[in-house]
Length: 226
Image 1 (cartoon, helix red, strand yellow):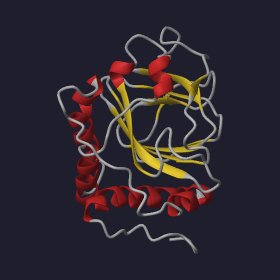
Image 2: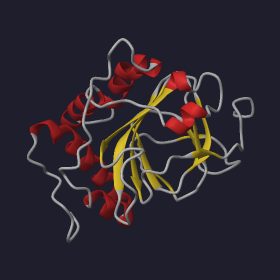
Image 3: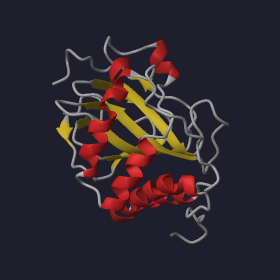
Image 4: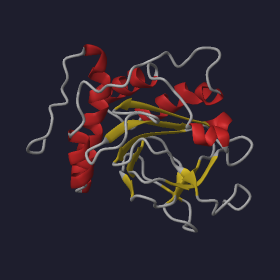
């Protein structure tokens, strides 16, 4: 833990799996030398644990039909304790969709195949960003989904837990990212993802303007994507 950072051990047993995932990401950030993102993660208040809600109700989002498979695939690359933590968090968080995406979906099947869940820090529509603001959560994409190029003012790190193809700039090629390797996007850097036969589950860390949603860059379309 960095000097002056908060203790994310927490005293709430219900928060323990979420804090375990924070520890997993912290280790990968440290290995990548991502000092700024590591400091932002360590600045999270252990009491600022986003409230949970069951995610598997019959009226849930269509993409949640793929959650069990995604968690099982992700656990293949995790140790037992981290796998248990992931399963506990994924099954207890409130899965949602960015309201801006719901108002302006990029293509017809996107909303059926996308959801995210913030489990540490503020969610969309929360308090205004502060210099030390950070938020951590999970992204879920169904198989066969194009998540087109988009950008946001927050700095972002993804830790893919299952396989997908990623593009890290407008016009940049889509390439399979190594599972468990941190992917960094600077503020306003366009990026996109494509899933093939399997769902994508990834941890994310936003820092900076974490309550400002992403916008489409309109630089590509499903028809243009490889």
